[in-house]
Image (cartoon, rainbow, N blue to C red; front, top):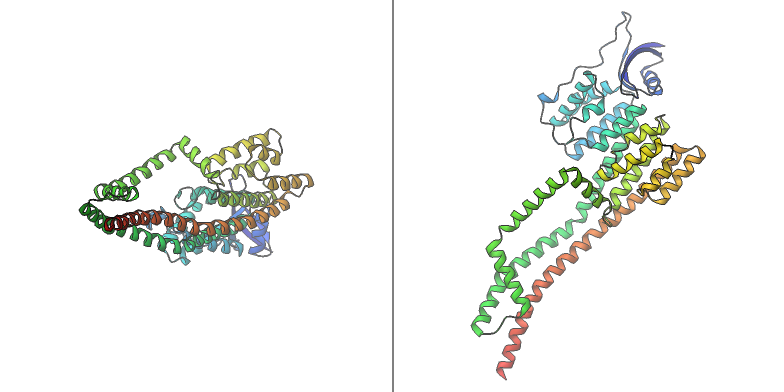
Length: 416
């Protein structure tokens, strides 16, 4: 047996220091986690009574690149590396210190250094992460906070790795699904520009010289051409104004609430964020419950997990109802946020006393459903874009053909 000096963070967020006996470092870390704490630093006690150095100090973000944003692949790499180090038996302090020396990207190195410095300053990992809202979303930070509260930070980080991999996979699938429609969009816009700027003026000149009247579809097409030629600059101005108004609207509490509510109820495309929320909520709640975190504390940590202000307000009401004595399944049922299957399975878990295991099963069910919804939406996008382009190009072609048919008909009658 060996003695180890340790620094850990308890479930209430306070720093805990002490000495324990264990067979090796891994056993010491498991002992700290069994006490519902996150090990930050662990040093073997030397014969002189002093702990050995556990790593060099990391540079702060001020010495590195600006830490405002981070590409998704780099955030995935950072999370995956930290999860591997903690799962291998390293403390948080050691893991971040190793990442400072291992990571090659300047911004990742600076980020690891800033987080490590936060630990040195006595802050929790989630508290330091809140200083970088452009990098760590509220979901990410709250899940890390939940891991710190339950002593299962490495497990939560592995869940975040899975989540980020799913986000990246969804983005890649959407991008791949849009390749063919994007080619059609470019070709369609090119055809429309050629038709309107070349063929329509020539037909107009010919009709004017023959004294024939343009058919209505061609007149509409010509009006669009004249409008675009004289006021094309209005389009980017209107787009910029619309974006500015949207940003200003969603930055207000009322605007953000209305926008998030509309997103939650948007047909078809709201299914993906919904089922991702269902799966993430069940998986995280089950993990917290399994690691001894109380239900009320778990609900507090999960309030921001959706990233949706409207859902957050519903979750605050759920937590208040649980405080007043309502079961979680009944409280969620009254808010009408979750599907009936989710709530029925949760109620069974509450009644049988196997809540953590049941929440894991619920997460499995909804993760499979999430995969189905992703496949459905990505298969829906290409034909939708193709139909829109076909309709627009078809209208332009119809306007031109109407003029041609009218011209040939006039010539036919003229010969008679």
